[in-house]
Length: 300
Length: 242
Image 1 (tube, rainbow over the protein chains, first blue to last red):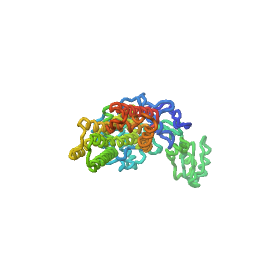
Image 2 (image 1 turned 135 degrees about the vertical axis):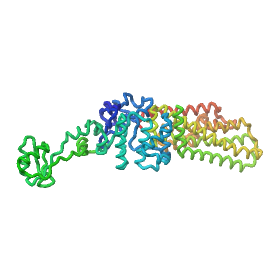
Image 3 (image 1 turned 90 degrees about the horizontal axis):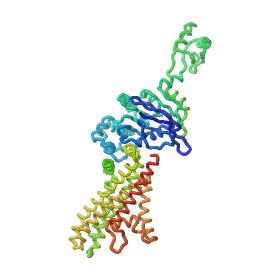
Image 4 (image 1 turned 45 degrees about the vertical axis):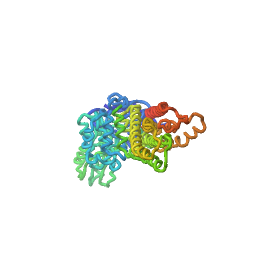
């Protein structure tokens, strides 16, 4: 289990992370979302012992990363924009990590196969594309067959095929009982991957829960198209708690709030008004995300 | 710790910097030694031959740079994060790197000394040079190799402390070519404690009239410098964000 508890990290007078708390549980994928500069990377680097917190704590199974005796077997990490020695081959990069962690060299070939880089292991990293570097980074994270994966923007640089591969991979890893904590600034990228999300903005928690819970609070209006839109608007407006406005798409459109699809359809039938179209658009995840995070990139 | 040093040695071996600097050291030493042997008509005194062969100590200058490049290179390439994810204990991580550089530098030193001996000694013998005894020759070559190892260790500690590769290389070169001679000229008795003075003492290049420290003391003082820099690097790495 990964736990962030009342974590604050200041750089000078700026609080990059401000009293943040959340937990990532085994067997689930937790999406850690926020715009660029929201404090995601700082939080994850504190969790991985690379950045010192100003106050609070980030722990792996109750212990700080720096206190872990065998960290590679407990947490696998993919850092944002993973860096490698450009002149070293991908396979040698992993051999160094495996040797330092006391893992057999055979594990290097296993993880290279797992991330589908087995054909490129002998190439120097400077010849790798960004997507290949991400996969190499993921291979490094998997070396110790860890109980938890911490991934900072792992989809950066991946093509759509790669993103789909990553999504299936993360779901499968959570299915094996691993704790998966994955950050992203693109909510849609995570929508089909995560079980739960934590959304932060300017270092603070702004929402936490399942995607369904997040989108429920921001329901979109029902859209209805009718040749007698004005008559229907009057009928709907007489219902308690219902507002209907002329839609921006044209004079025959209405945007109805506070009503279900069934109520709008029944009202139209009662009034004898023809309806050509009737639907409620699924609230865009990005819209919800922008609303939660204030719609702006943090100024950092 | 053994496996960490092994991993750091693998890091060294799998980059071109290590092999490039090893070849540069070999080429530089062979050029100077063999050109001298070719040009000089006679080597009438044992001291002449010993001084010439002590040129192998130049390897130490290049392994010092190698250590700096390796120690600071972790930060330049961002690989320090990988290192610390596997080995979160900063003291162990820095110690492993310093020790690996010492082993790598010593290996380069041994290689350069062995090839130099293989090529220069028969040629000198053929020119009827006044050869020092075999014990003296071993001390010169082994001293140079040990100096090369300790120089790489000190460089690694300095590089990890300063983190900026270019700045670290410039500082170490300024130390050797500007600060050391200036200090030696201005402060009596300080020359033997400068990097240059200690290097000369370790590699057997000093003549009997010099005030160089005894070999063992020079090794200890240099090792102390390297340990101090390594410890400072470990402390600063533990206190800084990566």
